[in-house]
Length: 59
Length: 90
Length: 188
Image 1 (cartoon, rainbow over the protein chains, first blue to last red):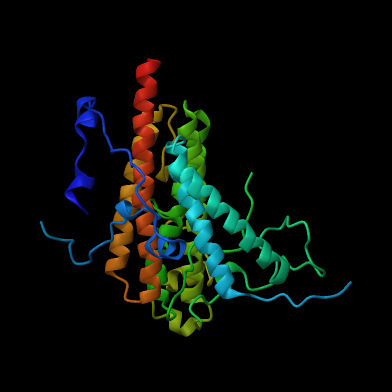
Image 2: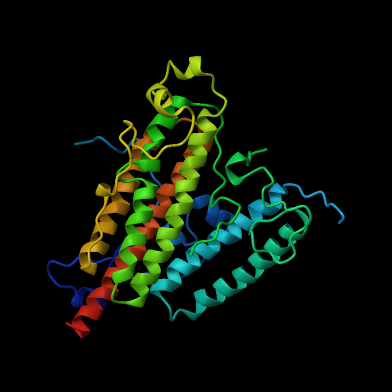
């Protein structure tokens, strides 16, 4: 995941209020082909965030 | 009435599942982005291909929707395998 | 109304029978953060949403969750079908077998039956959509716990698919929440 996809744009930040939860709106960029989309569980590359096992239990 | 030997076509069924999934995704996206022409076009292109695949399947391999207007004799909606009975890795 | 399509959303398979794993995965069939709970939550909430985007999103995701209920049901069926009772007797699936045999029943991994007390359905749309975002995160976490305990590559593919869907649904509910803020600003 690139820095760019994580950052909330300036225009979005300006309208954010205290005590509200926000998720940035997705803007369409490109799509996986159908078979690959099904295998990955999403059509959208920027939403593909696979689990890395073994990352749990460190506290 | 002539009997037709309908049977599972796994590669075609998998292709249908992939196009069905694209539809699931474009619908969810469009529900919150109704003005996105680009995804709307993608949705329509995919849906057209989906319906062609579905039609080919239902004509030759059995019903996937119980309201297909040209169901063959005898009624094959009841035919096994049901979706949970298929070995998808064969 | 709803219409059945005679195929799964995802080709759910198992490499080998495993009643122990079935007893664990059962929690996504009828447990607190399971697929039945998710589906009924969204399909109950949709009626009183103030904006069309929210009604549509709850309707579409609630429908998809029913397809996930079927995917989990498929895994459970494939993990235990044909396994002899004397083998089941040695597994964590034995208490389920004593009550239900090999049939699927909506329950959690400890055998507690499904209840709608697992979820909420508020008229206040912010309360409901925020609940749903939490529900998607809880389900994602449960899929990760299950992935940590699964070695069957086919089951892993299916659980990873369902986990990824939780992420996409979270994104959509987040967008709906934003649209609700806009609506409430316009019509306070």
